[in-house]
Every structure is written in structure tokens, then in C-alpha cells.
Image 1 (cartoon, rainbow, N blue to C red):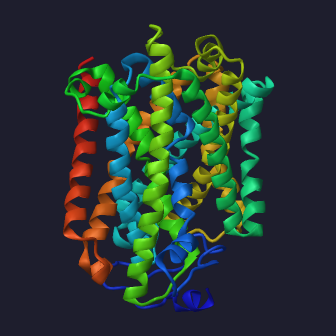
Image 2 (cartoon, one colour; image 1 turned 180 degrees about the vertical axis):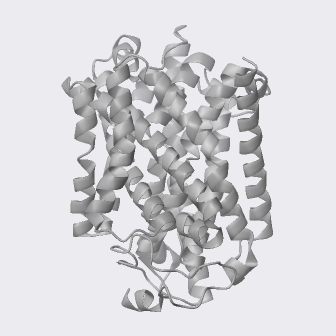
Image 3 (cartoon, rainbow, N blue to C red; image 1 turned 90 degrees about the vertical axis):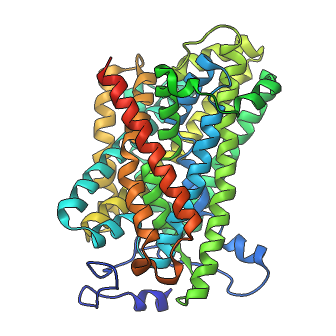
Length: 453
């Protein structure tokens, strides 16, 4: 770790080729390069040392906002939107691989890369848009956690929102133990979510033929404005802007060499890590939609989207009193996970764009405050009614923010001056450009549909 830190340029250092500014300090400096890896040995042993950042990223692909959009899509349209969940996941795998490449090859997270590549007239608006995305993310996660606390323990939503602020201290405590403890907490919560949904899916006994057909694309998704709105919500909940900033930062908690070959191998290992984790996320996301389709859509309840509605409806539909409790436990575990990773992403965004030099606890309180205050206000104003609409709207906001993170990411990883020999291969750039074009086109259509009523 010391070797990597000492090799970082200071502010007076020579600017790297292709960048307007020199690197000043690493992302998440307190844990940068803190986890050792295996320079030699079989591939699987090296991979084990790299496993972790992908699961932090995967958390963002199964947050409470995702639950709301998937539950709404499954109850209203059955299994039809499974194809969007699959498409979104494939897009996510590609984009997260580019994030890992950017972080390892350039030593910058996406926020730092934007600051070092663009003039302030561009980088500052990008920072503001990234903060909006963080607020939208936290709105979904804070409300989801508060609902989970309400369902399990009867706590009012307002109290639940305040309790979620304590995750700042949870992160500080875990990071003091070591970043591996943060990753262990995340993986444990993911295990809880998996067990809960496995039992619920077994109780629901879905139509597996319909599930398979649901993964086939249909033109109705584009021609039906209501289906498109939910599809964009799923897209925004799956390919989330804050995850692009998060992954490019946390991948650098691994200690790898400085040579091109060592970095190339690190990129390969980090890509495998995130791909495995995101396939796991697809399993959870599909399970949420399948559960809604097999219970609510099947019985004609096509307007179920409120998370507390789901909790109360599951017992009579599945014939088991344990089903609502499992749903509440999974929701709470999901919310806790998501608030932890969103706070880390907020730290990366603020530090990266503004190059702030503050103590760790102060940075986290600021980034958490920026996100939690709007969430608290909205929760107090709307209460339990309308939380699903707020959750889905937050995911559509995230989808609208996506191009402002995806386009710079593709630009940087395609630029040989910035990436050198570790520039992304041509096929990846073509697919990533197509992904960006699809996201932008869908967003334009959504805005036009809204404008035309």
C-alpha cells in the first residue's frame, strides 16, 4: 500500500497525458490499497482476494426503489417486464466492467476523472447532477428502510428515517475494523435477502413457462406509455448512476502492482467479481417481479405497488403467516445495505468532484445530510400514502441522470491518451455506446410522452 501511495503524484506533479489536471490523492484515501491480493498462484485464489467490490455494487441493483418498480411491474403486467430486468442487468455488467477498468488503469474514480478531464463549466454541473442522483437514491433507500422498520416493529416512518442516519456511524465503525468488514456486512445481508425470497418464491409456485416467456422482448414495452414508464423505472433502479462512481472508487481498495500487466490482470479479476455479483442481483430482481406476478397479477390485483400493501397481502395469497415477516426482514436488510453503499458513493462523488480535504466523519455527515434531509422532508409530508409513487419516481429520476454518468465513462475508457494500453477493447466501446444511445433514446421518449400528456 505504501508503494502505491508514494507513487501517486502530488498537486505539483506533472499532469498525466490526456488529462487536464494531475491526480491529487486516491479515492477513499483511508482504505485505498488496504486489502492485499495474491500476485502469484492459481486464478481462483487471486479471484478470492478480489471478491467484494462487486457485491457492494450489486446492492445498488436490488435497493428498495427497485423493489417498488419491480412489484408494480409484476402486479400490472405479469412476467412481461422480466426482459427489461435482463437487459438492464446486461447493460450493468458492461458498464461496471468499464468502471473497474477506469479506476484501475487511471487511478481515478469517475468523479475524479470528470474533474481532471473537463473544465469547471462542465464538471460542476455534472457534480450537481450526481448529487441529485445520490439524493434520489437515498430517498428510495431511506423510505424503504423506514417501511421495513415500520412493518417489523411498528415504528412510525418519521422515526425510521432518523434511525437510518445512524448508518454513518456504522460505516465508520466497520471501516475502522477494515474495509473487509464492510464487505462482510454487505454479503451477510445479501444472504438474508436470498433466503427470504427463496422461501417466498417456493410458496408462490409461479408459472415457470410464463417466466421463461417473460424474458423474451416485446414491442409493447415501447408502444405502451405506462409500461415504458415502469420499464424506465426498472432501468433506473438497475443501472444506477451512483454505482458507476462507487465501483470506480471501491475497486481501488485492492492492492495491485503498477505495471501494465499487473493492472491488466487486476481489471480481469475485478470484472469477473462484478459479473458474478450482478448475476446474483439479477436473480434477486427477477424474484421480486416473479413474486408479484405469481401472487398479485395472477389474482387480478394489478395496482399493487405500496410496500406495506405487499406485506399485508402476502399471507392470505400464499397461505403462510411467515411470508409477510420474511418480506419485512428482506426489505430491512436491503435498506440497510443500500444506505451503506449510497453513503460511500456520496463520499466518492463529493471528494472526487470538489477535492475536499475533510476528516472522514465530517465528509460522511455532510454527504449523508445532503441526501437524508430531502428524504426526511418528503417522508414527513407524504407519510405512508404515496410512498410507492415516490419510490418509482425516484427511480425514473435516476434513469434521467444516467446519460450524464454513462457518456463520460464511455468517453474516458475509449480514450487511448487517458487509458494507454489499457484502453477498453473496440467491441466493448461499441456496445457501451449503443447502451448509452438506448438509455438516451428511452429518456427522450419518456419526456416527450409526458409533454404530450
